Length: 256
Image (cartoon, rainbow, N blue to C red; front, side):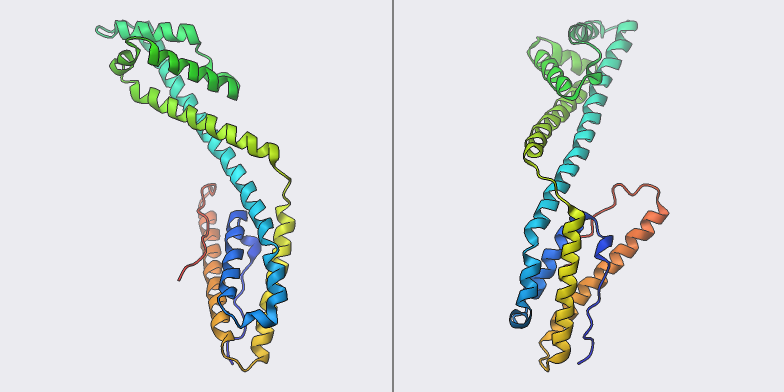
């Protein structure tokens, strides 16, 4: 038989989320080939036993992703409320015919709620923005005033960003209170060791056996390895050519 070696790639080059995707994908590939069951069941069991640990890594990565989203919603709501405040200050200093009533309503609003909302602590700012929005929605003529000053879209966007921030903050706090420390480095090392043992076993039994059923399995795993090698190389090239790699897309498992 030819091509009995599996095309391997550096699992260490994958991001945590990518790693949690590729390992189950490899398990699925191997499990599609019944020939593995007898000779390699012990090695497969050792790898599959680590899948719940990968779920913990994925959950931890989601929390970190939520933290980034929180920062983004915080930035957005600050930007929107500060836009309302800057516009109020501008109109309060210059009398523009036809806008006096709307300007006066906006000034009265921020005289009441303050102009330092974006500087407050996270939870305090959340409540102050809720109070501000409630006042705007209940005060007669306030929505009309925002419309006259072309601020209604900004106001609606501020409310939406604040709601998203609050929901994410509450969810993340609940999860963090129940979270356990996850040693992703140790879990990944154990998975790589189990994967290499599985690959070594596949190559050994393929070489020892006259059964050609091993070759499709090796070919499929090798195609996956080649795909990831190419994606990792392309990402490395993009990073070299760009200073900002923060939003680098994830490498998703290859599909037929």
